[in-house]
Length: 231
Image 1 (spheres, rainbow, N blue to C red):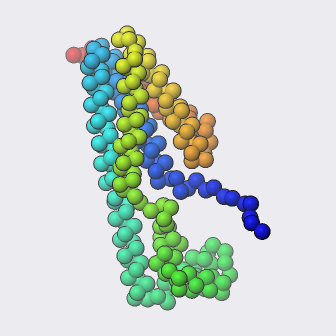
Image 2: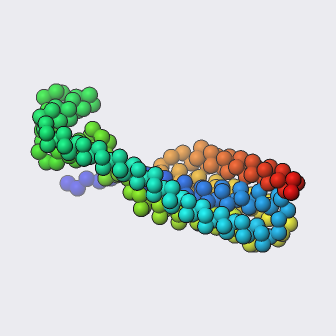
Image 3: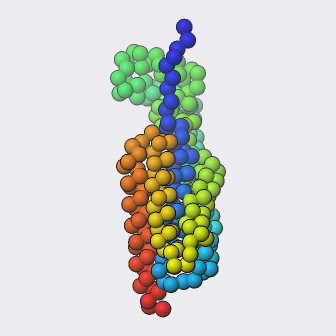
């Protein structure tokens, strides 16, 4: 009889989802804050657009480079651990089998059953068994630097384009209010979408991302106003 039970675990999305939400969030917050900071200093609309566009390009490149370097470092660590584990399996397979069995005992298996499970898993793929159960490395969680870099750059660009669009369609006297309100709306939507995609609580995620976006814009506006008066 065919089983009707279907499971949809969302942990498989964690790699690209983290990079996508982080990129879009940073794109909106940093570009909107930059625009607000320049706008309160009584800059012309053309200057505001120029600053915002420069922020979009620089931010996208920074996000791509930062994510690539960060996730590459994680990948290097994973590869080093796998190489070390491969050497240990070659030099002392019995000790590694006992170590794996000990992990299963701690998880609740009977010792004899744990030994049997460890032996059978190591017969099939010893390195995969130790990578997953000893090191916590699997196909789901493994680092993917290029995917993270591309995702972050693209989503940052999309996020940063939203405040710039608000500048384009707003009259000069309403740029500040238009960018602030629309950016907070975008952040709220982003928080809700990210929470929905990750299976988390929508209200908490939305409130969190909106609050910090508003805080960032307020701080930048204060700095821009102070510098604008000083110069």
